[in-house]
Image 1 (cartoon, rainbow, N blue to C red):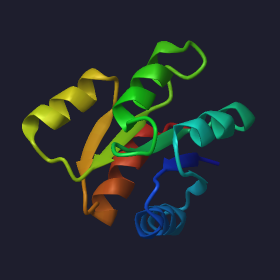
Image 2: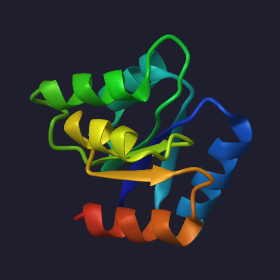
Image 3: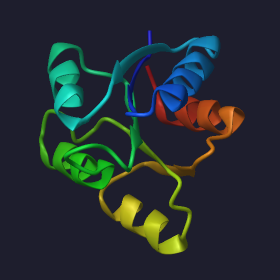
Length: 121
């Protein structure tokens, strides 16, 4: 079963993303910040991560880069989600190691389609 870690500090966004993924057959785990995300990853390795860019204490860009530098997490696909929709933002996100970059408000169908392409288990 595919487990998706959703890292999102806005409750309404978190609920929308997790319910969209659950309805598509994924199991979800929620973290509200980078520190919590690292703890959840160490407890149960997710099949993919949906990561907000704007988080408290540490940006999603920083967390993405950190996870991609570690041997134990470098192969987990990361989908960055942000209200920042400029080409430079997308470029920077992909440069940090993200597998995909979606702009908010996130389109439910695009999110599910993206994760189904990325998750192979």
